[in-house]
Amino acid sequence: MTLALHYALRSDVGLLREGNEDSAFAGPNLLAIADGMGGHAAGEVASAVAISALAPLDRQNLHESRAMLRALADAVASANSTLHEMSLADPSTEGMGTTLTALLWAGAQVALCHIGDSRAYMLRDGDFFQITRDHTLVQSLVDEGRLTPEAAATHPQRSLVVRALQSSTDAEPDLQMREAMLGDRYLLCSDGLSDVVTEQTLHKTLISCPDPAQAVGQLIDLALRAGGPDNITCIVADVVDTVTGPVAPSEGEVLAGAAAAGDGRPRPLSDSPAGRAHLLTQDSRAGQTSIGQVRPLRPDAPPPSHANGHHRRDDAYDDDEDLAEVPRRRWPVVTSILVVLVLLIVGGGYAAWRVTRSQYYVDSDGGKIVIFQGIDQSVAGLHLFSVYQRTGIPNSHVQGSLLQLPTSSGSLAEARKTVLNIKRTYACKQAGIAVQTWEKNKPKPSPSPSTSHKSGKKSSKTSRSRSSSSPKASTSKKPYPPKPAVPSYCAAQGTG
Image (cartoon, rainbow, N blue to C red):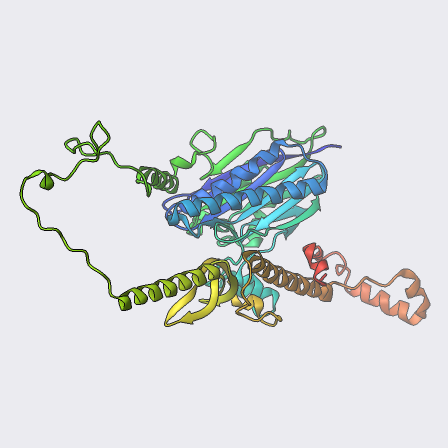
């Protein structure tokens, strides 16, 4: 038996948005959705960059799990680097970013890559599960037990993302391997669908619509009927047998949203407003005169020297008038000393300022973790530090930890390592809470037949009476969700 995918993809701008900032890709080996953010059309560029970085993986025919996860991680890092370079070249795109949820297939093996609040669901044997975890503030409150899932579904800040693929921070997606089974159905969607359509309705729709194309059409219609406040993108894919069917696997690659032009081909960056602004920025920089560049002389300007090599005298000295000699001014000694002192002070201050430019530290600003360049000091009201990079990580991620803010000044690599440790420590903490909750609520196994015989006739009668009074108890029990995934680095940090 050889497993393959039969899939359908559709994207809609919704009822309130002017443009579509979602991008998506569906191919025989890759399914991916990205939901852009940033405004000024930068969101559509970010999502398109992410999908463009991942799309080549569909044709690489990867088979080993490590290679699949590494390929996904490298593609995300490449997209992250591209967004960073674009934001440096065009400041108007600073802060742009995108969510990303992708499934890379190799037979029954599935590599999952996820960052942000787009979602992936799985329908197996009639049971419906969300297989990704939202990287949102509300979800972290749910994990900590401070908010119920029911309250989270309508919370006004449910779309506040704390992890995303952004130009201003290093991307750190969730990566894990899963195993597919014949008959599985997968749904990938942006929050334009999951925010307005309940999981119960998603479940019912996926069961009632046998064809993926029919299913995506029905899901889009449901989101539009619910108001369509955001872009809506979804992929439905069925796991089928290439030999027995019942339908043939899909073969073509499909692009949708900002990543696709009208004919289905990838949209060039210059076709988007942010891309055109980026190109205009480059053109304007190319037209500027560089420092030290020689400007052409005016057409009527005299040549700088005569042909015989003698420098030209000013016209005023060509006259035969008697000119009084301009006396030279002699600077007083005191003035000279003052000038020297000023030069020493300015030079020393500049040297000290240059030293602070090589120092970095981590602190909070506006409730978020920030990397500062310089040292945490002020001289005569002049700050010796400036914001280098805003990470978007809430201060709550360091609460209860041993980390003290601000950190001591050090290299940029040390500051970035501190931020990475903050992210990982918090992620491991949340993963540990999720696993503990899963273990706590995991149903206990039913007693074995041998235990029942040892309990005697009285217990046997009691068990028979209980079983006869509730004949459907065992059949109505809902399957328990799979154990939450714990990032591999948590073991190195003593978690998981």
